[in-house]
Image (cartoon, rainbow, N blue to C red; front, side):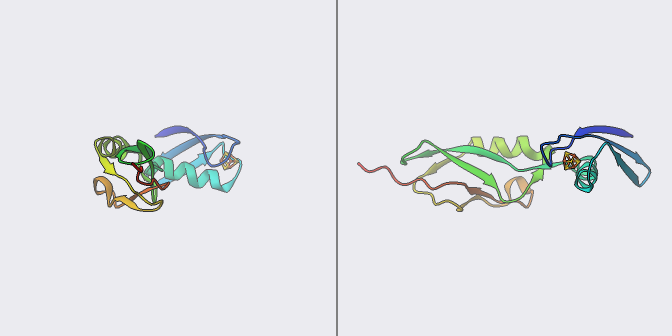
Length: 121
Ligand code: SF4
């Protein structure tokens, strides 16, 4: 099977062609070794960092930006985002607080990427 990807490791954006023959996977189109590693990873189990915002009440802002502590499987991103969209938090929240542990059983925690204080008055 042959799949094509754009390498997203650096701004060069090389066009990777990944060919799997049985257990053997070969990558062409990469200008460096990082591209080969990325192509194989993208072919086997693509993953991405998860970033979004969650509704928060009682704070100086109404949405809290969050980010996953590690990459999550690309196929699970939609389910993870749905879970986060349904949540409503209460201020205050500190940057780095774990907002969801093991989101959707991916083994990855989601953390606040900024602090939001309580709104006075
Ligand atoms: S293959 Fe190497 S040079 Fe090309 S985009 Fe990927 S990291 Fe950059």
